[in-house]
Length: 303
Length: 303
Image: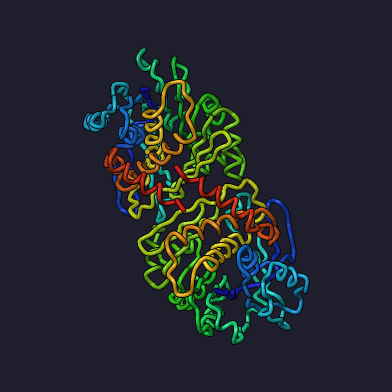
């Protein structure tokens, strides 16, 4: 199966206790796709501004990512600026300039429309839905979002969530979306509205994945080297989705066993992501070194 | 091996989204000992006031707990009052009246001094140290504490931590005590000061246990029924310590494998604790139904 990814390709200004970086490559689709490139060659649908350097596109292509669906606009590139405090658990946004994404009208090619897998990385749910509606043969549809859209465009977000197979959100977002304090209850309530699988990202506390009558809890890889958490959630989703795509057949249900292995793969990929600024961490994830961390994860909770 | 437990036996006033209870049985040693009674018969060293009802002592004895070391004072009983908000992740203290514990001078009997296992449940580290210094034959010493003592009596707390084998703290406390944001680094830094094992309690996110060159990450039992989290950490420690006591020999090092099984036992016991107010939840934990939840935990993170 071949995967299409819609989401932001952007500039980030990032401040963590380990340094400050300006105008580095960011965006959910960038992190997601580099993570997915550990196993597959995804194609990105996005828009960039006139100010986006060619070298960043070449850098993405270097991972085997198809960048032909990244439009160039006369507007500016999406630009996020934020910082992390001492514990780095939460990203604090200084500013978000949507730029070219504010008026983005995604148009898929005929080949794009026939892809079997769509992942909608975090972006305006209205844009996500516009892409979803163009797909003619989707077998597996995933979605990520964030608190900003739950607060500002809840109705649009629910419209798209109802049509996805696998939903990725962090624990606070799952509770917020469902209006329920118990994480398990909240995830099950969302699942009833559409997605077969709800994957709850809990940062350093790992992942809880819920499918029908099935719960899987995966610890995070125990790293001591957290330099920049930006994009870790996207990298996790990219790793997880790429494993599902690489190991399942069209039309076949995702087994609980496959889901567990996919979540572990995503967790291992994400552990590389936090070890460097921007995409420099996840760029170091390869099939071989991710496999090693998956084995560490396998033993971490065994007794 | 036989275990002595020093810690508070108290009155609690508790408010959670599920109700309000006043003057119910509380105290770290109470929760700990009922949890430990799933496998062993611990003896409590504590002080209660003139106002403490005989029925609570009988209730503790009913679990096989030895209450002969609980002194009665002419002062009032230790009384904690607190509440939990919607998410119930953090206990908010309304008041803490030390009562009889403010002037408690623990005096162990000759039989007590010869016990091989001591657990110092959360209480003033000066009292903990006074008990520890009376022990003549301790093979295994555990300790729990809280942010209040880290802030107010850090030096006294370090003095006792340096002499223990196994330390229980929650994640925020481990970071606070070590002055280090990375949880793994913080736990390792504390370990270097004395304890062979540092067990980090993370509430709904489970437990991370660190021993020499070994990390074990255990998820929490995925319960949807959280009524009152008071004493869950004490119940976890009680379950964990009782498993170590029931399955190890004097003078023999705790193996990583035994530690993993003990942590799982503690997690399963703690999952009962949150399902009812005061000690009514943990009181329902039996060897047989804890074993069932341990099997759920074993499968929860396997892939």
